[in-house]
Image (cartoon, rainbow, N blue to C red; front, side, top):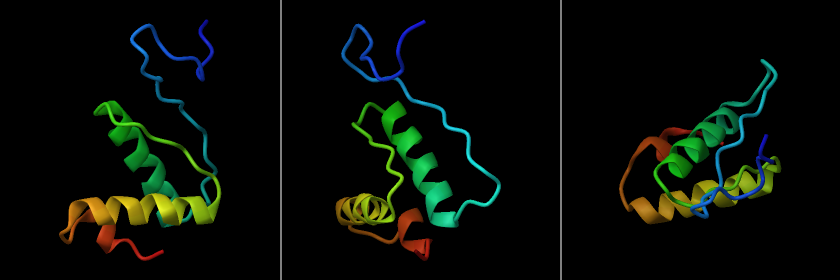
Length: 76
């Protein structure tokens, strides 16, 4: 079995599935889903467990879109 942190032959890291407790904040839940979708489209993605890193991740996505979208409707 391959180590989930090791790159595949083509250099792309495969997604890591994480188990979460039922008590998860809305921002945390959507951030994890967004990162998985983003990585499946071929962009680099990091799964962060620190609130500060999650806020930076969300801000970077807000800056890229330039319009009101899914991210702007989530209240941190």
